[in-house]
Image (cartoon, rainbow, N blue to C red; front, side):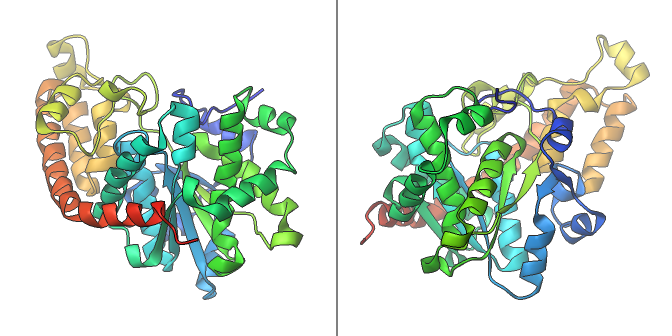
Length: 368
């Protein structure tokens, strides 16, 4: 029976990932190396598999790659942003070639989206990726449905994978989702093919719920090591950002409880105004006891995404816990900050749309 659902909204027990599935904690040296990134400084990126081996390979001057992707089922939300920022960090830190897969086949298998519809969404997604800072000249962006090598790998992996194995990892799913899992394994190991430079260390930044994909791919890499020269991919894991109502992880399946990088000022104001806080039952009680930022989704918004300066986050927390600032006043301040961030991002994105369209049109019509 599956323990983690990569397609669901449920929050994951992080401790179980260490005790039952063997995730590794980040060492002090790793945290120091990536301290420029708020995710590593604040334990949002909290675990890894095989990262020390990846770092050593890169530091020895050998070529490395970082791989992730997106299911083009809607606009970039904050979870997509978090993964993209890690991709860009690792690309820059190690001069790693970035491989970015547009998982249009999974969007069809999981969401029923026709390829024509996901094509348009993919353009929008890639524009966000470029605006966030991807170095496109050291990147390879592709669609699953148009990448013959990825599909060949998925077919190859299918011959050595039983339905019992897939059911143990994912529970009972339709065959389309099972095949999308094998396709994702193809995505992850694709950078190691001879035409992409041969065996090289690959790191995959993922959310905690994606660990079944990493475990399956590491097993497949071992099975095909002699035949294909594959090495087990490394991975970093980040914690979930909760939906705005605090009940589940943020997911595209619930658009009213997510923030999108496309949201207007009006949408941000409405959504954040209704978000869960850590406020007390009465104004008097909150003035006396202070708020509870550990329960507050608005605090998480700033912690995970919108305050790069630790002092800004510390000041917000102190204003809350001291009772100096009530939740309504706090929300107004954060809404203004978020909208300023999104305004700048959307301006950058607008300038990247033509480039994104060209990239997606090119990968939709490969020469071979």
